[in-house]
Length: 587
Image (cartoon, rainbow, N blue to C red):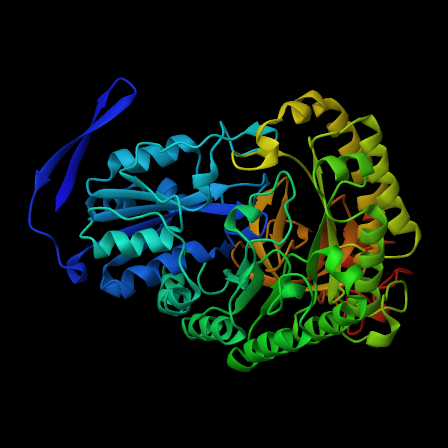
């Protein structure tokens, strides 16, 4: 085979010196997989999530004959923090980079690789360099909205224009000579998903703070102008048995947190791509619970609201099954994108504002109950509701910079959100972002021009939504006293400790004081920001609580907190010198 020795810079062009040598046995190949993270409309991969791509790719390598022990996995954050690990990049016979952001986001658990870092990996690699994942759809100047995205090879020997896992398999099978761009089939996926589970053990967050993104299908039956998911074709569903087997293998490798996020619409699982199939969902969710009895998280992501309004009774049954098996705090993201009928028409959006509202209402009525409440009472909120997050609520995605956007568009969106709130319904979160325009989508002609032109209007509108809708909605969803189990403490800022639960769109929790990072605690909500809450350790020990923790409790000021501290210890909370209701926080 031919093996690249080094890349020689000649202006902006990189040439390769080649040396011929005998083909290496796949069992002797060393491979380093670098995870630069992915974020797609139906796929999370920024920590604490691990995407399907590195797992499927590792499984494909093993299936092609590479020894499990010869596969090294690193995240881009690991390489930033420890330059010694770049040796694994340089020395590997095959270095595989996986990444790509097709939706913009803000991240706490990791920082996606920037284009310059991706190039550096190719330059450092002395073996063959392969790049793949959604990065094949294009890259911009930065990982942000209002960007025009371009396809670039970033100086790699090979770029997988089909599936990276199929390219990896075929490249090894050819002796690193090349591959034909192709998509893997479900028979291959069944093997690769099961065989690649070992990679999770090499993730720096394993085992306690890692959530595995699970694919049930990919592709979409609809063709919205901006979305990259239709570039995968029509929906291609895995079987429930295949997904359950993968969960079992991951569970046996120590994984305890799972998110069925890799699909355009979980309700359509096992069906024709549009109508719900409750029986398939029962086999999927029931099977997962059987093979992973002590799982910590079972969440989902995408649900198409048009499915719910098109098949309301089947959808209600499917939603009941999900709420029976999932863990609390789950979110079904709805891609409304715009409540403006003009924008809907020009961008081939498949759900109207009225249809989306009806879908929001149905999810609330079926799954908006809290553990400890009667499901028949859903949606449950107010003073008599249980002190946990609801089982499953909708999330609303709004996208700006689409064709036909005008000043009235922003007003249409605000009116829709206000109606949801005024009707006493709940949504878990409202995601407002600006478009990224990719080749191959209808937005490629328009690009990000509209988003850039409306930047100031967008920022003002976004702030109004945060103040007028987000904060009061968050008070409804997670009122004071709501208990958030297993909050992982991640960083310090301004004298506070911030952490999140594992799951879909988890609440950011700010806790007074600088607690030890890396630990997991239960927290009780005491106050609300726009998209985050203030919490205190739960249950609170009045004899140990700090002044800052005490004053965070509603009804307790600095003076009362001082009196509580001075008069310690207490045998019961009733002995504390305060009229504040401590029963929600002290047990």
